[in-house]
Length: 505
Image 1 (cartoon, helix red, strand yellow):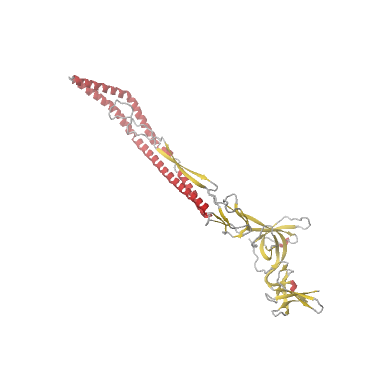
Image 2 (cartoon, one colour):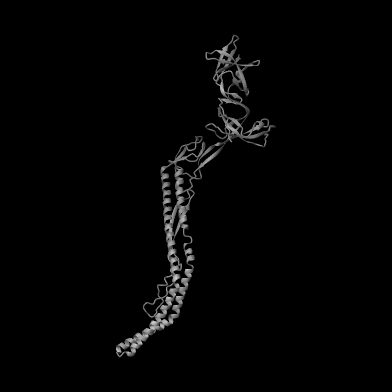
């Protein structure tokens, strides 16, 4: 857990203090010049501790162009394919069996087969790592600039945004059209398969009756021919007209030819009827399996089309979320350490938009000697100053104490201690020197003054106060904790001007 030191420190550094002062001279009778410095009583913390220095390490974060779109090209193609699924041409509808003497009303057994035509839809998608090109219009940040999350880093040209948006909208429309086509084809396939199923069931249930009817029809055809022949023979026997007699004899010859043909084909016709019956029964018994085969895989194309629609819509949503008013905004807070683009460049996943000094990962690792390491503990608060900002004080905490020691070129043993800096100046770069003070004692929110402003007489302590009228007043004070450079003081007020005197010459 990060800890931040509470309290106010006014221009205080460990081991010394920074004060505003003025100098004036008094010339004595011995011509010695008296030097006086003015210091002001301040309020803050008085801290003592172990101070070490090292270079700051700032981890870098990269913001990348991560608008990865899965698919922008979606198409639907419909292919028709005929499937011989065993649908009968109709047992009830007698087809041609060949010549049966030309007798009216006699037909052949319908042939099995002749399945319906079913269409199939193929939905194809093309995946791309990035399917739109966004062009930089203006870069608004420079290296070394501090930004917050949401700040605008650069702008994108409206033209490239419009082109990308049009392309993504077209992809959604294409995907939706493909889905509708796939759904139509799926419905047609299911309806066709259901029709064939119902036909097989109906024909199978009527197969026995149709078979019996066909055999009766064959027998009745032959019986009819016998009756017709007998009738014509009777007419010939009683006919006395030569012309009529000749016509009857011709008719009789034709009937006998038809009878001979019918009797000769009877066995074949009965066999064909039986085969048709058996096929109808077989298709009836396997109607459900044949239906399942016909609809097997139906819906796959529809599901693929649905996924394509969802992907296309997700791409469009991702694009709109990424582009806010033509701007690309900062995803991190920190100092810009690099910018990857200039105006006119095209965004690419291969080039970072910007790199940042991570404000959450600023550390300094100092070496603490074995004499002082006992004063350092994990999670301890520390005070931090930077050579680049000598008049400011920052805070941090101990995050790691190394277990391995180093001695370098001397006999002094030291241990690496890593400090996370929790408050930093506006601009902080890797390599800047930081002074880290591990606090051994601290009094907070007290009045303090430089030790040089305090004089001691016996057991009493005094300061020399300069009044508003310019007069000087010796004031007795109580001195509290001192770190050797500044000391807690009581008996004066915040803002009082004290004098530090000395002689020169």
